[in-house]
Every structure is written in C-alpha cells, then in structure tokens.
Length: 298
Length: 221
Image (cartoon, rainbow over all chains, first blue to last red; front, top):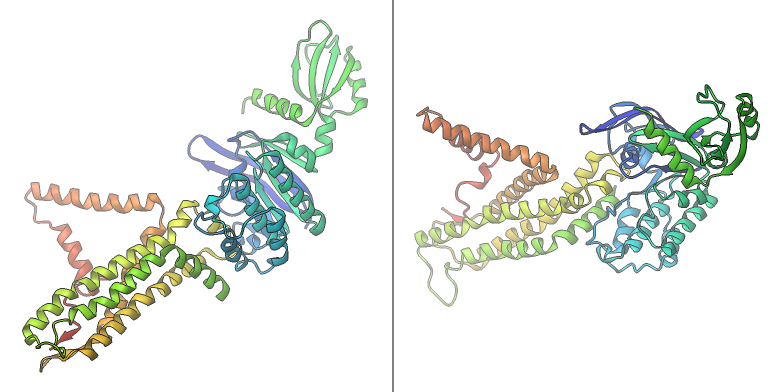
C-alpha cells in the first residue's frame, strides 16, 4: 500500500448548484498532505466522502487499502478525525469524552491522552461546552491522537485560533508523525500554515482539483517571469502558463507553473528574452493558480 | 462491546437521569396511592366497589407515565447526536446499526428502574393493604404490562426521534394529508372515516398500541 488515500474519478453532487467532479487524489503513506482551497471549494465534502459519511455518486475511494464507504467501520478504527466545527457533546466533561472515546478504539493510548491533557493545560472536569474555541480544538486533537490512528484527517483544525494555540496543535501533530510515521491529511485555506508543515499539496476550487504535487515542486516551480519581446501566441509551452499581463514598459509579466531554469531557452526560441525570474511564495502561487483556473470556462 | 455499552449507557444516564429519577419516584408512588383507600390498621376498609373505582382512576396514570417516559428517554437518547449533526457517531469505528442498538439498549436499561419501581411499589402496596373479600392483587401482571407499554412507547419514539428533520416532516405531512382527505371526504358526504380506521388499527387488538388501552388494575376481581 503506497497511498494512504487514493481517490479516482470521484463524483458527488450537493443540491443543484455544487458538484465534485472527476476528482483524483493520491495521498502517499507517511506524508503530510495539505488540501488547499478557498471556502466552499468542496474540501469538507471531500473529507466526508473519504470518511464514508457520504456515499459518492461515482468513482472510487480507497483509504488505508480498504474501499470506502463499504469498509467504513474497519477504516475508521485506524483514522483520527478532527472536523471543522466542534462535534462533541457540550454537556459532557473533557474526562467523560476521553472515557467515551477510549471505549471504541482498541489501540487507545491512555498515557498519550494523559500527557496531552497536561500539555494542552486542559481540565478533565470542565464541560466541553464551556471551553474556549482553542481548548475545544485541543480536546479534539487529543482524542484524534490518542486513538493511535495510522491516518489523521484534519478539516481546518486551526481555523480561527490564536497563534499560540495553533503552534501547540501543529507541534503535537508533528511530534505524532515523527513518532509513529502516520499520514496526515489536513485541509485549510491558510496557505502559510500548510507551507511550513506539508510535504504534499493539492489545490481544489469549485469541486475540481487544480493541482496536486510535492510541496517543493509547487513552491519552487511557480515563478513570475518578466519577459520582453514576447509574441502574441505561445503554443505548447513546457511550463504551465497561469497568468499573462502587460507590464509597464519593462516587458510582460508571466506567472508560470512547473518552471525549470532551462526552460528560458524555449522563450528565447520564440524571439523573446527572460529579463527576470521572481520566486513566488506558496500564497502568491495559490492565488495565481486559482485565478488561472477560474479564467478557463469549466 | 461491554465497554462500548457502558460508555453509551453512561452518557445516556447523564442526559436523562432527571427524567428517570422522577419517573421512578412516580412509578413507585402510583400503586401505593391507588390502594390508599384499602383497609389500614387505623381506619375502616373501603367497600370493594369503591376500592375498584379508586384503583381504576389511579390506573389511568400508568400508560400516561409509560408513554411520557418512553418519549423523554428516546428524545434524550438522540438529542446530543442531533446537536452535533451525527458527525461524532458516524465517525466512530463500529457499524451504524450497532451504534443504534447500543443507544436503544442503553435507554431501555435506564427504563428498567421505573419498571422495577412499579413492581416494588405494587408489591408493597398489596402486602400492606387488606383487600375486601373477593378482590385479588395482580402486582406482577401490572408491572409486566407497564414494562411492555414502556418498551412500545420507547421503541416508537426512539425510531421517530432517530430520524432527521426531513423524516419528521414526512410523518407530519402524512398525518396532514390524512386529515385533509378526511375533511374533503366529510364535505363531499363520502362514507370514509380514515382517522377512525387508523385509530382502530393502532389501539385495538392486535394493534401495536393496544397495550395502552383498557383498564390498568392493580386490584381486581
């Protein structure tokens, strides 16, 4: 099993206006896989399909080697999940939630739960409903980690949290991965956050996958070029043309993906010259990817 | 499986303990109160007919209590899952039918307390009372009937409250359609009595709700 999550040709429809179509994802075992996309792009729906909470209309989902949703009970015993919104009952205390959860997971790690309770400075006697947003997120992370799953599926786990809590949570996740070699599938629209921790990234918009690649390739392959003397038509370039804008006299500004330094010769072959190659950070690359995707009629 | 049942039972106890405790107190008190007119050391006995009348009037409270307990414990069983949009339950690593069975079993286990309270209260009431000649006490039969009524009420309301708002809407729509058809039939002078037929099918033998009807007598001839 090379892929912790394998999705092929996934199709799902939500109402009449939104659909996930022809989605393919390949999440390598042991990776920290960032699932990026703006709000409403279909990230949460995809996660619910992965976990067997929804039944796809077409395509194939395999999680940890088992088809979903057919084998959901077996798969969910090996998967820790943190949803976007707190889903636990507010009338139970933190201790009661831990006790409840431990009864359902045969590999429950009591010592890890106790350690995280202390580390996150949580009070076992406090009602979940009375906790702050950050404390609720910590409880959910604690439960997901103490389950000792081989795969963690995290849906915007740090959204709206202060930097200290975010750092605590990301720190706990990284420690877990380094200790257990687990796979993390983490969705977010906070690009900078994923940039620091992920080694793979997929970008989704409007129910469709825009790109899926190793983080380094996406980060280092997305560039802004300043090109002078460029012809009107550029056919079959070896890179991906994400954006092309007229410059202010110094040449055109191109945003390209999958860029390699030797590709400058292709541009020179067109009778143009590359005057500058500017690195884009992941956020700029992400924005340009989205822009270019939205320009193409679907 | 035992640990899972214990975990589910604990949460349900936490959510419905006030209902269960009050129901248990009520279930214990009704048989005692229904025989308060029977002979005691300090006063004369009621005549058989008066005692039967008293027992019968108190007896209406048993099905009422059974239905109320069934309804409230069933609602409490699902309330937390509804609040969390069932995400937590659906991501637990067990078949969904088994989760439903755990919730159902836990609720019924809690309802054993008021059922036992009826039995104990009925036994205590009949042991301490002196019954007029010709009358007999049926504490065990009464407790069994109460248990059956609680079970039926809990099962029906558990099934209804397990559903989504859409399910509830469908049920309400069916009832509304029945009423509408009945009203139209009455206006058109058609010989159609849907509601009466439905009621007869539900509450007269062998209807599923027949256990709630008839006389609930702790003491009878």
